[in-house]
Length: 141
Ligand code: CMP
Image (tube, rainbow, N blue to C red; front, side, top):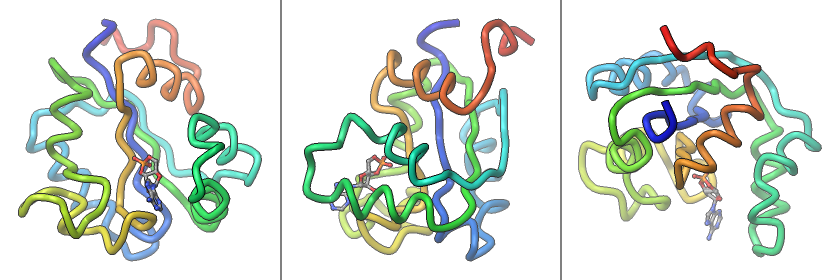
């Protein structure tokens, strides 16, 4: 149902450091259901497209290059109030400013290698989920 999903990506550094299992465990313990999951490697073009909303920001080029530099794990997560609750679980964009116990605090190193992405709105959660998965009605189980 609209409003109860969010899209996350575990970013390359966290995947290559083998943090995927620990991160998924924390996501499940926080009450999110995994509705779709895949490990993949974004091409530079895909990374550009995914982050197109940031194309005018000074960090865009570095962000695109980083996100295409190694494997990622993309997931559609479901929970009531998914977008806001997930952003609380992962913490601030900069791990140095993230609250204790948050995923970015535990597994991130800096703003770029901040362990995970989380959608910033219900609208973007749907756009981003459709970017990674052929969804439609498949979350209805
Ligand atoms: P994410 O949640 O994936 O959404 C956009 C990403 O841009 C963000 O996480 C950060 O990794 C990155 N980002 C945001 N602000 C900065 C910044 N000031 N410098 C470098 N990267 C940034």
